[in-house]
Length: 390
Image (tube, rainbow, N blue to C red):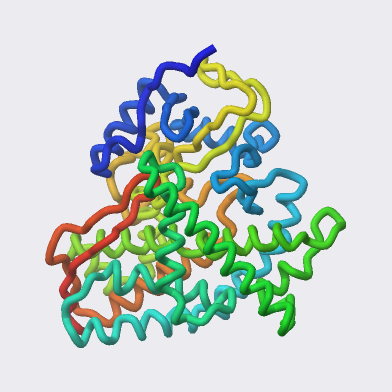
């Protein structure tokens, strides 16, 4: 039996606003949609369907067809292994840890902003929202911060592993290998100079046991490789989206200066409205029927966070950006057992980046059109801007 007829290709529309309009039309007409993109697969676009899927990890599995040929835990493994990886990593992303990390993040933000304020003009993406999350990640894992640019570049390259362009796929393959090399550098360093596993994340990984057995070094390398890339890419997008929004809405920008206590709720709405990661995959653990469509065991199923985040059955005025929206049960960090483990750090970094920018400027505005990223991310590659110091 051949593949189903294609209902849509979410990557075909490059303009993000038009893509969201198309996604809304597909959500109404065909909420369980098939695409031939990246080998073929289904997509869930209704909020309630996504919630049902993410709360049923036996049926909608993460272990299926790893994008880079090897499973990267905890993202690409299922229960019971997944539970143990989460237990291992969660202590490094608690509220207490975020309080401890905030001065470091604030220091990086101030250091990045200082020369930009002196110059007055900048690319707020390339010189602010790009380096800040990677500098934090380098410190968290123990890389020298001077390596941030290489880590950012190769991490972004890996996002094109499913590109239709063979040159991009080959670049993604090479960058994946390079990230594994960096992970093994961390492992070798901790073997030479052991650190306290309660305080140092790579040491915690190396000292861990999974299902009663010491963690395999290849598995440890895969886990660290995932953290090296996932620890900043989506945060960069969310941060850039928020900065770009305020740069284009001076009244809202000023309102946040005058009432900074409004900023956390505004960030949540910007994450919903401009969802940084549009979709993430699952694989059918058995034959499933959803809204009259049959999905066979083993077939890929994408959770379209971006479509769920604008579902009118859940969000009033879903296409409007309402910075004081409450409640706001958005899906931008996922849902269920695979809810993004780094969400507390992402929220911290975006908040601090905006607080620092708002405090240190009287205004900031764009001097040209921002350049947006390609599917499946929604971010800002370039953001030419002028800064007026406070």
